[in-house]
Length: 141
Figure 1: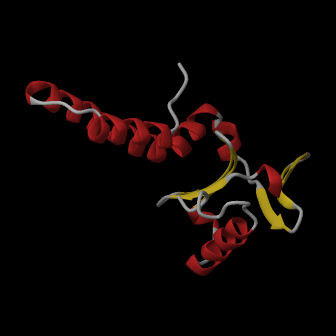
Figure 2 (figure 1 turned 135 degrees about the horizontal axis):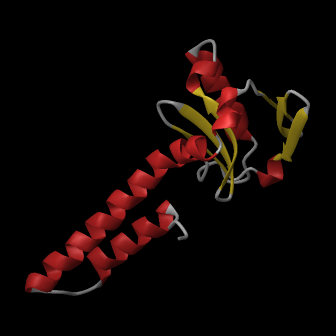
């Protein structure tokens, strides 16, 4: 089953709630559907990093060094390295546990907040990543 991107779910909810003229029981049903889509959108934003951790637990059990520079995002783990240019980074999301860099629907890097020595280090990492986004407003989730 393909997941509905949160922005699509919110758009559908707003369309149902605001643009469809209804009365009586149908109005209540339409509002309930709109509320469900909104809750789904928020839930998907919260669950995305957690689902990624469950799909590939071995990745989260090994130390990975993630660095940002003018060329992009670089990840190093034992003998494996990954390089992603800034053109491929579409957004940066932050929740209480993770800072996640995304390319479309795929997570490029999921960095636990505990990996940063201080909150200032975390904020600097986020600021650098967001400064390289083509559309920084989209990356401010």
